[in-house]
Image (tube, rainbow over all chains, first blue to last red; front, side, top):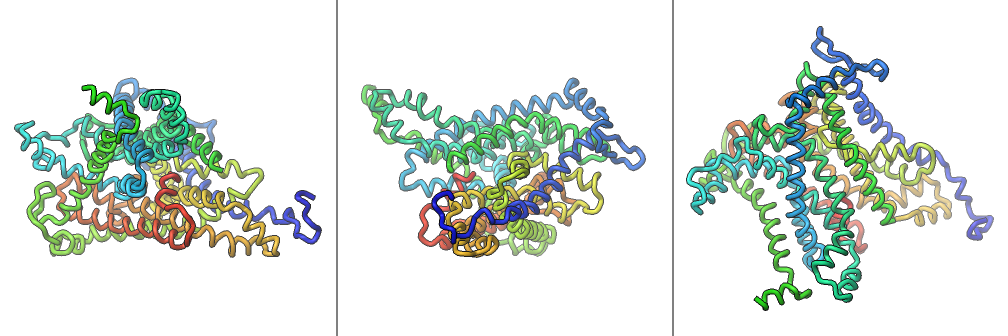
Length: 307
Length: 290
């Protein structure tokens, strides 16, 4: 007997094996019915056929009978620009936004992790605060500030930087990118903070003791050690940005700044283009799969490390 | 110049630049929201020019204030209903799932675990579109509206409960449970009298996070909404922003924010009281949990 257990002790292997799967069953069933099946349903609708009589789309559940006309329409749209432009634009906006997010977020996370000291709790509370303010309210705040007679324009006029109010909300790509940065940078800072906070200070001291300059210590020790956090943060910010459509509508509302999210929302919620909408959802998901799985993989690895 | 480079090279110098960046960031992140709150107290109709303080948009105005405009307080009611119902369903479902997935060793555990994790990384627009198409073209027993929104929110938030409860479960380990069972407790009984009390702070914290997430959620609620009767607060903000909105929208957003802040304060302080003496702050736990 392992660990020298005496005969009188109850045998742990008699513990019912059915208990744990049974506990996991309802939640798993829920996820199958309301997540896996609807997701397969999107594919079934994309591969289905338009029902002209009822102006709906008939799904096809059998993959062997799928039609590819919706994907074909998406592909044509990508080639002629009607979908291609928003796709390219989305990548452009997201990449610019993420780069700026890092420029803002890394120093902040670094400062709080290394120099937060006794005030770390206060800093963390303030860094978390944007999470508890509705995203829509944060956008509402900027819509108010960026009005023609809003605070931003009056400040600029006061400083004599502009003579006429700038129409920030008039379909300007920079305003949309600004909104994305403002909206998502808190999501980047937290994983960065977690990664930087875990770095063993003795490693930095060792590097210093060996005569390495602070800047090189940062490049050779801190930066590589925070790589996991940077990648996780980039993934967790990029994923919602790719599916964003409301930032765009609120801060620009112009087709000139349409993103993939706007295309999906329009196509899915219009009866006659549901098939194309479903195909767009599939295309977006496939494009994001790498990011999604990378994030799952890295957070799983991090969790194992903590155990 | 030499003093400046000397200062720059001093490894023990105070990080003034980093401190400045951090504070500037915090101001930039938080002050706009405070200004939005300020305008909810505006005397006039403008959301961008300050015209003096009043409670007009909360209850003063007889037809346009949050108290008197039925569309506004219905949005408030819908958001709170959705958040409360999601918590009620997510709690037992999520805790059971967390327990099951952590302890279950066998076929099926890995796929079930995987399935449960995917919503954490799926963009909301994908979940929203999938469920929208599900309810409109695939099944016809549930229609768009509050029940569809509820199902969407539960699906989206279940993983949050599982992740947080499981984190706590792993730090507790199985020693207490083994001890209870060595002393003759049945598995169900050791679960009820040992594990669940130990998990209570984590369950509580995760539910408050669910509450805050649902109240703030826009995409899933919007995709699964039928008409104005299932409009939530973020949807109301969205739909009225581009139209001729009054500061009542700001007031509505502010009221919602107060609810969220109360929920978060409860999430931070109640587990601390429940834990009684165990160290570590819930904020830090949560920050690392993310």
